[in-house]
Length: 257
Length: 302
Image (tube, rainbow over the protein chains, first blue to last red):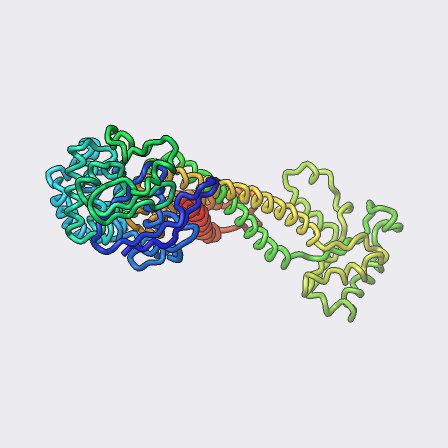
């Protein structure tokens, strides 16, 4: 489903590669957390999976497409099979909830009939069918993220990429969002979610891939969230305590700025 | 398609002031293009009209002719006969369609008619005007032959191809139309730049929508189309205004004003003006599509 092999991503003007020889396999229906502090390479990895960027070396295959070689004409069609949500929701402020969701179908040329039905269905799924005619500014953060999720899954994507979807939300609201993402996963959608929120990672007991300085330092399919047995983390990182390993700091305060 | 049109409408309203400036700049630049085209049409028409009618004049000596060419003063009857014989000779006759003689009184009558109301008409006497053989050539380009064989002949003051006067006039008109085209070229460059700036501005004000459209997989064509249409709509409005201006120039200035003052000139007609309008609209659409297409492609590089 997603296959990343020996991928290095070097941005222009930075000495250290954002990703360094990263390899990762994600199967259909998997639920994978990407963790690691800011700048560890989580977002770079997700950008590669979305084909917002191209790897400097190595191969990225997503849904059978070689993203190094895909033609720019095919990229839009590739992206239709992916859903994406972000920390900052990215809703259109001048459109209602229903219009925001419908917009993503209109611009890929779906028929009005299909759109009406699909939007109503997905809003019911995320529990916002009552608020379809509200503007984003009239919704709480959690509700806005539900709209964003609705928009991401309305076209029934095979993969959901979530970049810190709970980063702006309080713990109680986060829980509701996570329950929704789990339901989406149970319906068969592969989920890749970058997060800082250790509480969520601990509770959901899913596969965890930890990145540090652009390298995968842990890929743990079993439950549990432990320190790397080799102790490599603390020696590599001079004096900086990553938010994800700090129990005392609420994770949503340590989001990427 | 409905969605695309809605986007175009919204965007045109949001950028109203920029859109108006695009309309005005394309309007003015294409009006210059149209005026230059009209001028060229006018030159072409006058050329075909006048070149066919242009004659070669063999001016004969008068009492007031300069001594250097006419030492004997007024041409004698013998000399006149000699010139006429030459025109009828086997050497020249094949090139000549017809020729006729104009005496002092005929020349005077023509002069009085041409310069009616002009002060000079009162002072001129018939004897001061040249007697002339007017020659129509079979091929107007061959005036050289007449002037070579008749220049310097006794009693001939000057052989003059009327086309040399016309060439001066056409030269001036040509320079005017080249000037109009140069101004139009500069204006078109600024129109293109203005269109691409407007489109970039419009893309910037819709960057959220654009970001989401790319994210959910809208095709590049679909993303770019509203912007290209936006530029094309604005430029088409400008081009239509320019077309209206060109037709107006023909209708009110050329046919209304010039035609009254130049009754014997063959001026461009309304039909010619209408012929230019689709050209202007086509040029405007092409320009706008190219400028906005390039601008949006550079802005939205994947």
